[in-house]
Amino acid sequence: MSTPSAQRGLHWFLKGARGIVSLPAIILMSAFVGFCGFAVEAGIPLGETVFMTGMIWALPAKVLLVGSILAGVSLPAAFITVALSSIRLMPMVAALIPEIRTEKTPTWLLLFLSHFIAITAYVFTMERIRDVPREHRVAFFAGFGITVTSANIVLVAVIYSTVANLPAMVAGALFFLTPVYFLTSIWASTRDRAGHIAMIIGLALGPLFHQVAPEFDILYAGVVGGTLAFFADRLWTRREGK
Amino acid sequence: MSYAAFDTWWWPYLFIAIAGWLGTDIWRWLGVLVGNRLSQDSAALTWVRAVATALLAAVIAKLILYPTGELRTVPVEVRLFAVTVGFAVFLIGGKRIWLGIAVALTLLLAGQLLPGP
Image 1: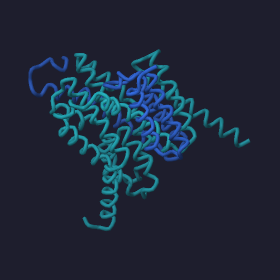
Image 2: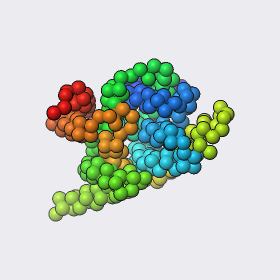
Image 3: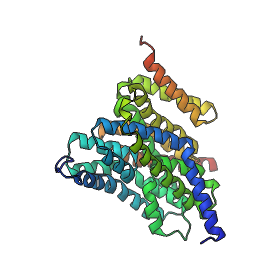
Image 4: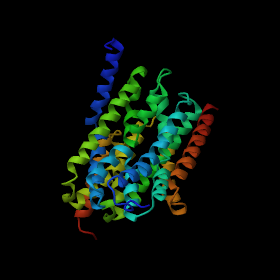
């Protein structure tokens, strides 16, 4: 299988893999140092912490799962907590898939690769995917997603025994890095006006719904905020057209 | 049936697999099935993208206002000031992500080191 097309695919896979030294990947790894410290503090053993990193991959879901374990809740309760907080993955994946697939991409491959989609991979891919030829986008995403996930699994395993010695102020800064990075990078990678409006409304609605319906706040803020932004953008476009 | 319910080596892993892996990947799989039916540049995709962005924005706001771990010990005013100024500098400075992050982190650390009023 050394056809030119397969070679090009490998080339783009490796190009995606090189994303491990990008700003998003480095920030994500710092956030994983923070998460690892949290897991150690919570008394989750090394094996389970590493397992969690690979199997869940989305950082907020892991933090919630550790929180549920700490609270001693039952399996169904922990499942519901994680599942409710992870509904956000669905629109993210649904928005990303049309950007990377071609007509020939098999669905099983997309189902497999979707595991590597979390906020960082979403942001990284949306930012760069337009510069990748369409037939190689799946390879590019696979290269980035698989490499970054594997790197963080190794990272968590390696730092587990030393992370407890991290000064409190540094640990706090690591937890702060993630939201600040998301805020700036999502803003920078959003091209359409609807996205920018959605961002502003979502920032306001998140805390608002947290007061009203803390268990579904993210979901409500997303659906209500996104829909408002969508119609605001339509209205704006119609006005401009007149 | 809590995490510590059974004294076997495999129970915590099963707990994590069901609550953690299934709890997240079912949404990814559903996202693939939905995304496969959306055509690029359709209005439906614009809406899905807006919902995804608003969701992320809500996550960001919550991570700053209701944080986990050590960040909880930093006063909320310091967190909000750091992220607001950081974002403003990011916008003014030609949307340089590293610049916004550097400013926000510096302010967060400085806010803790400097003596309060």
